[in-house]
Image 1: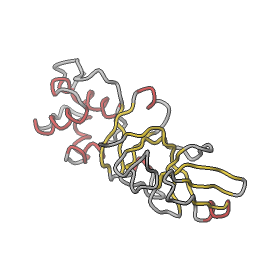
Image 2 (image 1 turned 30 degrees about the horizontal axis):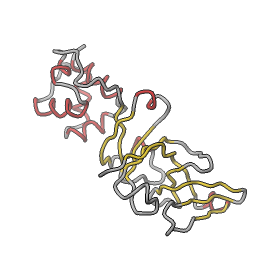
Image 3 (image 1 turned 45 degrees about the horizontal axis):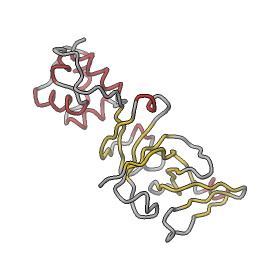
Image 4 (image 1 turned 45 degrees about the vertical axis):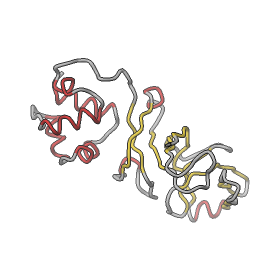
Length: 203
């Protein structure tokens, strides 16, 4: 397997678009296209950046060594500082960091990370922590979701559904639950964009 094939395989395995990879390593998107479709080899500096991002050796990329630097078969997912209304997760450019999830989990859906802001979900979740989120539009009672209200910045809250509407509940007792009627859910709107499945606290 040559460089172009290895690069394409690594990028697809990690579910990273050509545009995002180009932004991460500091080249034009067209350069990634050339690397994947021809015998063009990037500069040593760019090659090292690619190797570091995918956690492989440059020898592996160039086909000189079939051994990965790590036996971890995880997938990298993007971590965002914010998720805006009406913008698909795959189209968001403001990537803060990357987290890794295992192959088995990655096979069950689309995932992303989101940085917690504020103290409404303390004591368990604090500012700067990262939650791993599965993209989905429905949630069960008692589960924690990422919610968009009236097009504002995404918020993390526990969900309680009632026949009259929905409660967005903070774990910090200093914050009162927010109640939205079924009419408000439609008109504002109140939109669930994902289920929180894991917390990765930062120290």
